[in-house]
Length: 386
Image 1 (tube, rainbow, N blue to C red):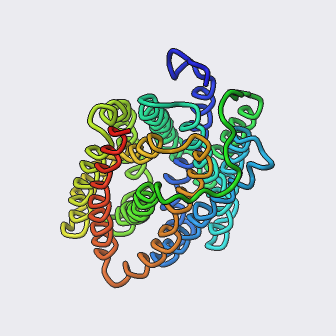
Image 2: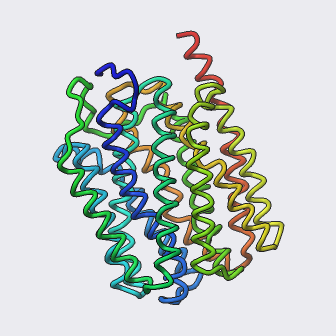
Image 3: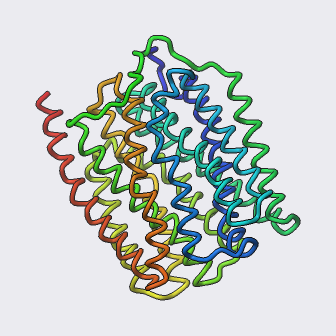
């Protein structure tokens, strides 16, 4: 690998920033508009929301196909094509304001988003090593958060002038253009070892797989139901939801670089333990306290720990064989989405029984994450002996 003095000098760093910004623009734009578009324009209910969100995660479950697609496409170009597909999905969302239309367009958008995220994580771990990994991952999250703030501000202003479907058109078109521009760039380092073009499942990576599985389950409950409770139960408007997204991403933008430094200083086990211990209280708070202002506060607190999850990948990078990175990221993403395919639909049904049940389930999942995080100590001891 070329010994750049700083990760900022690496052409792949700038390339990933471009694609992260484009992906964040598309996904955050869709995410900000979706609940209000689905509830106010399409008229979906909690069960349909759960089904839609489950369908959204199916492409994430299928990300192991990325390994085989890389037999055809160069990885960095495949990442750009995936971002373009994300933009197409966002653009088409505004054209089909129906339950069936949402299902169709969400699959297109989600394939692009999940396939890009797999490549993004893979390229980040391939092109950066050691203590640079948490810093790069944190900076990319920071740029994504800054983009999300800009998207939120844009939607907050333009939603007063345009209908929701027109905003989908604008955001989708911009994402496609940015992805097309990325196709003209070439940030490749030819000295890197070639990646395995087959699925890799190894016993020594079991903790990485476990943490990914639990992280995906916990994330789905938050992403689907923490926003849905604000819209469906507490009747937040597009403006209120957008304001929350902006506030969350301002927090992430400023906090992420410090999280990367803290991971290097205190270690992955400590940072993940702090995250999961805090999120346990957050989920219990959602379930036990019925107050819109308190729920708003919990939503903001949850995002304080949004960047901590990069510790899972930086932990993996310490123990991974270089040629295993791309296929392992694909497998990790698939494992991350196993529960995500079924949890939203099941959660939507359980919501009709009692809206507290999904959040109590989230508290249980976070407890499991906290338990398995303590096994990182054994890996750390093994690394010291080596």
